[in-house]
Image 1: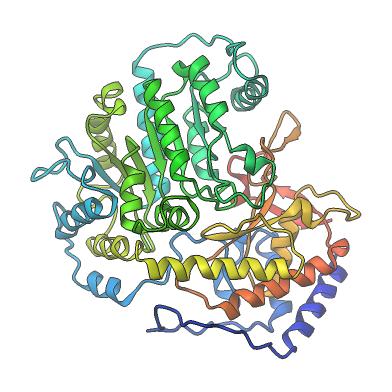
Image 2: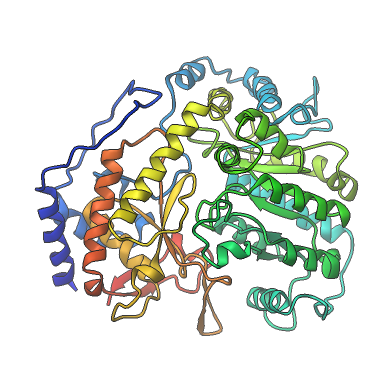
Length: 543
């Protein structure tokens, strides 16, 4: 297979020799560079990257050395933000006291300012007493803690009868739930509880499954029908949600809404959809939570795309969004604009509080055992101060205009090259549609997202496969694709890190692959096909 890689190496090398075309911009960025970091490798080291890709990383972008990526590292936008000088200044003033450090109280105040006055009030002068803010070292740890405690609370309610699903469920919905339940625990011993979402991300899904529950994706019909002119493809399917709550509400401990919808292409959720989900959950007495990692980007789309919000400020839109939920989990590594940190937050007097009165106390115990004292939650005091400034910055209109505008220009560049992407472009990333990329090609599309990310590494850019390998699984001797089907390669753009020239060079490299897509080989899985969260660990070879 070396000859195919050498073919693309020569194509990439010739592309580097082309003279760049001038771009046209009518307005400057709302920030300037205060610091730069020169890379320790060269875009011309193509053969070296080929060797690392094949012999060290096993074609897996997660295992490829970051210090050997001379172009855009678009593996994730999580914790990869370039922080501001204001954040670095605040971090120099970090209070590293073990308990009740200054940054904790500053964070509580900023949470009220960012999300609304009904948040960040618990504990008061006695942190840990009736607390509502639980700090963790990152969002993934917060997810694990939340679903661990939820599973414990559900078990405390006693054994449940593993009865069949209601015959009154929408037939397609019932089939999807049953199929997913069987794949988790085996037919005849299906999990009882279901966590519906517009779309769970990979680690959220993994945490739900690990706790013996069914993660159920209910993306809206407009998304499934690939309506490129629909601005809120991240919405939840309300008809399916209502069918679930009416017929199997006892199996649903809470409803989860991801803003923006990462798995669904970084697509936003409308305020109308948020409020209608709230109405349904309130009607059936079911708690409602956000996965709020990209809340500010979601608010920007509401302001710019939803009727009635053009004159409403981003901070006010955020407050209105969060007035509808019982609680939320967040990775501050996204719209907190920092490199580390996460949290779980609760609002008092909600259905969740009434259903699980001991939840917060037990979560405090878990937090102490796993992360440390509740007032630092696994973070250094300086990190808390960085989060405070990040939350203050992220709702600025000029920042969000620049951030989402850049991602949209990147998407437009790919479209201009004929590359099929999920449209409209979302807030934090561009998603390449792998099925359409290889439509009409002479080979099977299974796992071809892995092939694309591998060859892009040779070109010097790191993308992430979020498709049939990341969201599928191998069970019972056969491959089970995600349902609904997802088959994308994601280019997640770190905040404040790259300029258009960088992103456009990645688009040019992807165009080379698209123009010769018939020559791109498939992959064989050499290790990890049957593992959980397999895309983080697997190794591949080209066929």
